[in-house]
Length: 70
Image (cartoon, rainbow, N blue to C red; front, side, top):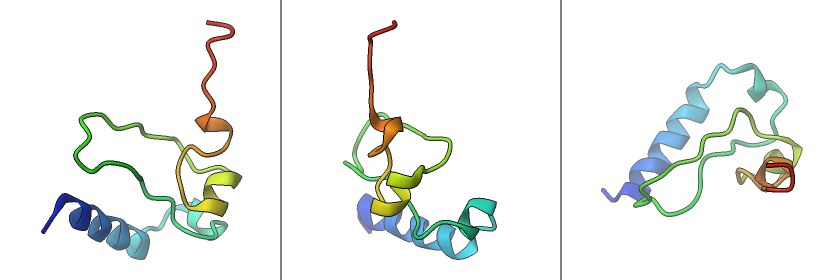
């Protein structure tokens, strides 16, 4: 089984067994996306409205990065 297949299986199992309060108002799961061979992973606290709508993490405000005030 490839890493991509393993991750998909984990995401499916998580969504079926998840008892998180967010699931009650979510329209769909928002699993990770990207290269399954990546050496780094970004973890978000909770999907926002844009992420829930598209099913992809970090596409809304949380996906914007600014060094303006750094």
